[in-house]
Length: 385
Image (cartoon, rainbow, N blue to C red):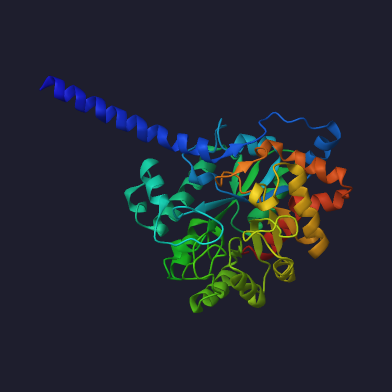
């Protein structure tokens, strides 16, 4: 009997350790950094970089089992590293559903890998079978991180919040954060849920992620259709609330339909351009122009599917191409950090983009716009009062 109890206790301890370690082991396999810090940055580049407002439209850091207030040895983003990279504004985007065998061509919504992550990471039981509860839980986590940060991480919900934060930031390295939702699954086909997400702090939502939703088609979905009737109501409701429409992952039809009826700027939070990296994940010239026609911005991603490269040169190739199609006023950064990607550098390496832009002959005004001021403009035009 004693032997049986000991074996059972050992098995339970082993299972507990496995559950505790599993999320970290999974992230170590998913969020690679190809060139590890520290990065060599010239004084000239560093001087300009430190004077700018840097903004990034997309990071999935809330998905992983890390305290973002503390510096980590894995992943791409946390508060200390954001401060070191002089990132002023960071969108934290929440993933609530991910299919098996993820790819950029065709995905069914019949599987749900995030459920297993929720169990392994110890999310509340209510999140295991509810996309809505997952989104609300992650909003709670970001608020908790802000509360733990001693004022270093500031949540941005309104235009007033944004203006006050930027005016007070000065030479400090505080970070302003806003919440985004990657895919509209948490709405659960009910627009009344938008009120709950607004109250929780969400200010940016995309109609679809890798699968089609009740709002609209995904570029990597099965049907790849346009906006549904509910989706058209969603566009109006989003604009009425001062919430930003994010067209990353949207199907061609959905993107064109949203931009045709939008009365406020939209964004594509993280993408590449087909002009430098031709695949189904990236935007055509027609799609670039459609987003720009709303006054919106296109966030250029850092991973190889977006750029067909693995360094700052490839990122700037895409920025330069987009500039040529729609003008520098519509180009921004959209890293997709911590989005299960191989990043060329972590967030402390962002000055490498500044350096490459300088090498290409971009003016200081152009660099300031693409590195953050375009995003500030869109936030100022779209967030609620």
